[in-house]
Length: 354
Ligand code: ATP
Figure 1: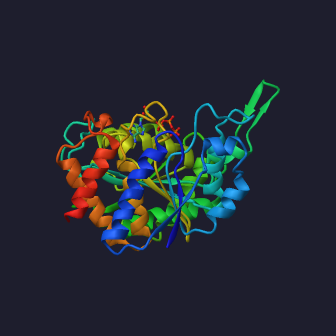
Figure 2: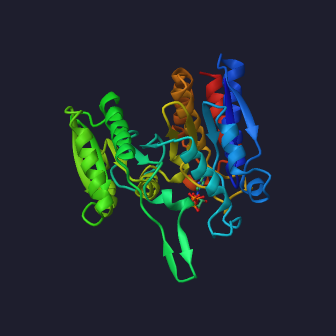
Figure 3: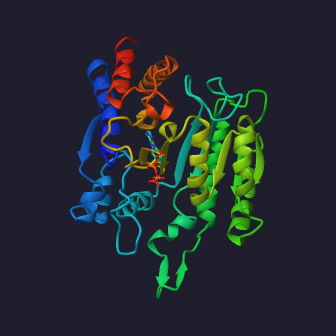
């Protein structure tokens, strides 16, 4: 199967190399049949006009799966003042209707949490589902700045959008291995329904959908209170569902509890297309130094393999990666001194010996 590969910007090409090397090893040494097709789509080729959004969407539609490294450069911006590459990221999510942004939050072996009492691997293990097609960010293509005096962005919440994302969250909770061992499966709805009508509607639809899942507990949190709950009670969390921008912000906070952005991976899913990418950005501050943590990129790749029905390959890569981390191997963000290439080589060595 051919997959679309977007190497992105900043540390993107460096961490994508890790993923491509691992995929290559799985193809050569095992029987994985994946053919990565690389595209030079990034902040520069977008801002020079070599790649325009409609052409990118047209290419993307030819693939079932897209493996994407972080894209964007803070200095390459359009006339409206926002980053050029964001048109592409948000455009792909919106045009391909990748409505479910699935972000696992998992404490891996050997990785330190900033929280006390969470040393055990798996002691933090939940999934944040971010609605990806509407919410405040859907205003990206429609916001206005008028006469340098007034700025407007609108939040969009629809019945269809809220129903399908709530349903996705409940189904994930239902089919999930019971992570909160002795407790019931749970979905936490995060909003600001005490302030905005759009969130009153979001919560109402969520509640309606919840009636179809009597075996799953529901919990309601306001987004501000949720930031504290995520730090004090991460063991109580199972599946979280929230609006687009809240999901963006909360997932960086969640990442910090499991070692940082280098460990935050994700899938953007529709019924029939998936785009898999790290949660973090292109980290231009460390680009070109060869010190980026490739874990989030590698785990995005395993998530893609699992979604494509190749779970046995995602399992062996995750085992190899966990074992490298458990050995105490760490990149600079983990307080270690192992470089991106060396880290990847260690994972590949484990894979060769598995
Ligand atoms: P975006 O808005 O596109 O998510 P950002 O401007 O919020 O991007 P990131 O690029 O995500 O920022 O980086 C935030 C910080 O985390 C930076 O200091 C960066 O160096 C660090 N960081 C992000 N990803 C990694 C990684 N894979 N390895 C090491 N450090 C990382």
